[in-house]
Image (cartoon, rainbow, N blue to C red; front, side, top):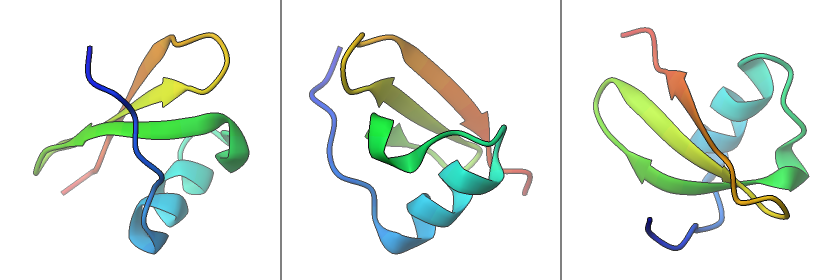
Amino acid sequence: MKQGKRPTKKQKIMITAAKGLVLENWLVERETPTQLVLIHRKSGKPKTISKGA
């Protein structure tokens, strides 16, 4: 598993819009054209968000 990075402004918008996640708790592991893979800051658990196009 890669080390998480702080999200960009565009990624922040996607995180808050998707599933009502709290932005301060998530780091971005990787971004692909179809999905955004996040890591929880404290627990380290991954979560995947679909970009929707």
